[in-house]
Structures are given as structure tokens and as C-alpha cells.
Amino acid sequence: MKKYLLSLCVAVTCLSNGALRADVAAGQTAYAARGCIGCHGVGGVSAVEANPTLKGRDAAFIRQNLTDYRSGARKHPVMNAMAAGLSDADIDNIADYIDSLK
Image (cartoon, rainbow, N blue to C red; front, side, top):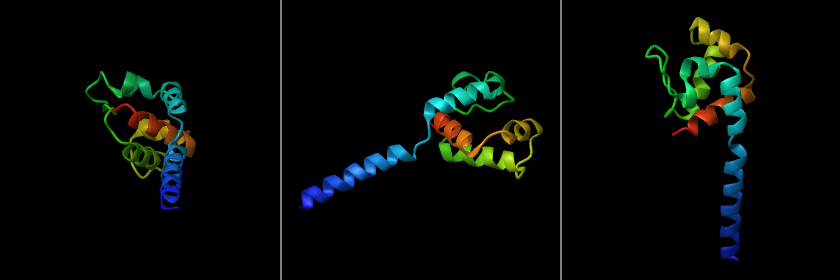
């Protein structure tokens, strides 16, 4: 019985971790379609020193910053405009796509 419960717990944990992760492929598509690639580069590596490279950043960092730009809590004219049209799902997907670039 203990082995069964342990197996069940492991299975539920594995399934829930996958379910919590946003759609990385949709994030990659949104990253390109929403223009992120223009400033932050292919694969999150910026070719312009003034624009930050996003590769290596974790999903929580990206999610928080995009949410702050969208709400206006963080000010940057270009990023405020870019983030204004993002849904929560877009933000989650883009954040998990960037997180996957590690």
C-alpha cells in the first residue's frame, strides 16, 4: 500500500508540474509576433547593447516585469506600449519560453 501511495504521489506531482507550465511553443510564437525579437534578439540574445538579453532569465522575472510594464508600475515608453496588449496567458507563455532558453 505504501508503494502504491508513493507512486500515486509521484505521478500526480509529475502531471501537475507539466500542467502548470505555460505553452512554450505559443510563447515562442508570441515572442516573434509581438515584436520582442526586434529588440531582445533571436533566442533572447540582443545584438544591441542598450537592449537587455533575456536568455538566462527565469520565468518569474519575465512574468513580473511584463506585468509591471503592462500595469504601468514600471515605466518605459516602449515596453509599456508593447506589454499593454498582452493577456495573462501571453505573459505566461512568453515567460516560460524565455525560461526554456537556459
